[in-house]
Amino acid sequence: MPQLGFGVWQIPDDEAEQAVTTALEAGYRSIDTAAAYGNEEGTGKALGASGIAREDLFVTTKLWNSDQGYDSTLRAFDTSLAKLGLDYVDLYLIHWPMPDNDTYVDTYKAFEKLLADGRVKTIGVSNFLPEHLDRLIEATSVIPAVNQIELHPHLQQLALREYHAEQGIATEAWSPLGQGKGLLEVPAIVAIAQKHGRTPAQIVLRWHIQLGNVVIPKSVTPSRIKENIEVFDFSLDTEDIAAISALNEDRRIGPDPATLH
Ligand code: NAD
Image 1 (spheres, protein in one colour):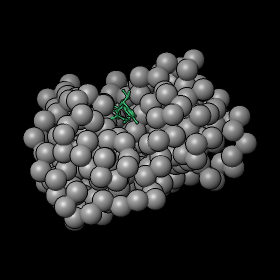
Image 2 (cartoon, protein in one colour):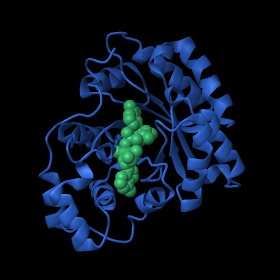
Image 3 (spheres, rainbow, N blue to C red):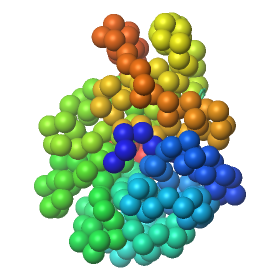
Image 4 (cartoon, helix red, strand yellow):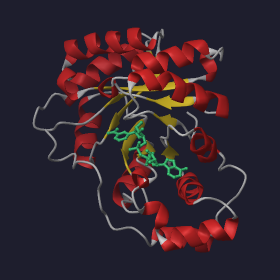
C-alpha cells in the first residue's frame, strides 16, 4: 500500500474524474473513496481512462453504515465494484463501527468471504476503537490490515497507534491536514515550513510519513494536489517532530466513533 494516497471525500461525482486524473498525473497511485462519497463512478472513470496498469493502482472503498450485515455487505460490494468499473478493490473498509447496531462482526465475515473469493486484496476497518478491534479479532480470523482514523497534529491518537503497532495493523490518517482549518496557520508549523522552504501542508504530511502513518490528503486544486505528494525529498529533524507532537489537543473534527449511530 502506498504510504501517501489521494482522498476524494466531498468531491462531487462529476468533478471526481478530473480531480483523480490530476492526482494520477501528479504521481498518486492510491485513491481513497467510499460508497457514501457518491463519487465511485467519477473515480472509476479516471482510473479506467488513465492507461495505468491495474496492478500499479491501489484502490480503497468503504462499506456504508446502512449496508452493514452479511448479505447486504455482499450486495453493496457488488454495487461499489460496478460503479468503480473494476474487477477487484485493493482495500475494503467498514466505514464506521456503529456499535449500537451490533452488525460489524457479520459485516466483517462477509469481507472475509470477499477476500477468499479474491474480489478484495485486503480488508480493514475505519473509525474502530480498541474495544471494537478486540471484539472483531476475537470473533473472526483475519486481523484487519488497516484502521483508517481521524489523525492530525491536533488529534494524534497515541493510544490507538500503539494498539495498532502491537497488533500489526497499519494506521491510516483521515483528515491528515485537519481539513486545512487553522492547522496550517499554527505558528510552530509555519516556522518549520519556513526553515525547510516548504509549505505548512508539506510539513504536516511529512510529519505523518515519518511517524509511519498512511496519509490520504484531499484537494481539488491542481497545484495543491501536486504539492501534497512532494514530501519524499526532505526530512524533519527530531526538534521539528517534537514541536509538532507538542500540538496534540486530543480534539476531533469529526464524530466520535463510540457514539455515532
Ligand atoms: P484533509 O485533511 O485532507 O484536508 C483537505 C482540505 O485541506 C482541502 O479541502 C483544502 O481545503 C485543504 N488543503 C489541502 N491541501 C492543501 C494545501 N496543500 N495547502 C493548503 N490547504 C490545503 O481532509 P479530508 O478531506 O477530510 O480527509 C482526507 C481524506 O480522508 C478524505 O478525502 C477521505 O478520503 C478520507 N476521510 C475518511 C473518513 C472516514 O470516516 N474514514 C472521514 C473523513 C475523511
